[in-house]
Image: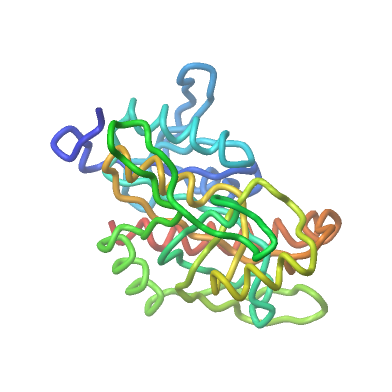
Amino acid sequence: MAGKKNRSKRLTLILGAMPQELVGIRDYLENPKEGELSVFPYLRGRLQGREVVVALTGVGKTNASMVCSIFAFHFSPAEVVFTGTGSRLNPKLRTGDVIIGEKTCHHDVGSLNSKGMQYRSVRGPLKGSMTPWQFRADPRLLRLAKAAVKTYQPEEITANGKTYLPKVISGIICAGDVFGQSEARIRAIRKELKAQLMEMEGPSIGQVCRQLKIPHLVIRGGSNLTQENPGDDYRKLGPVAAHSAARFTRHVIAQF
């Protein structure tokens, strides 16, 4: 089992769900070498002076958990960083604004009844253990990421008819295996979780890393507004958000 005494102090595992979310990482690798673990391809190289392994998880909680578990167990990284995009639950956010995940949470774990969503922990794989539905980022990684904001120079973005410099803030990121949401459910999630962004993998990464005792951090760029049918908006705005998140992720990696 991956544990503190067995982890590499110099290796960071960087994951993303979609190919576009990792372009801004892969294109900046020094001396990248291709590899394959089980059936999953990866790149290994150096990023901002740090040795990294970069892998694609695919979309959704099961895919993210599977790939994170396999790679974390094999490489025993010092930390896991997940970079990517999320829809903007907070309408005050703009496309490309970056959220450092202080906490990630499942928005679809528990019981959904006439009173709404009742969030609760579920039975874990170990005897007597329960798995929570929310996961806090590693304190050290969160502290480094927040400090990195002070020296970060964002790149100007043009999206939704406006040109601006994206901001970087910390907040809550929620996830589930539902791509679109009804307006009623969106309102409920905003009220219940106070989340900034919605995506589909973050808390699964947190759940795996908690079980394997590996520090983790989730960094997401806001894409489209959270909506019932996000397809066209996500296709247009997702690459912008992915680029913004990857740019800040590179800056954070330089602090490790």
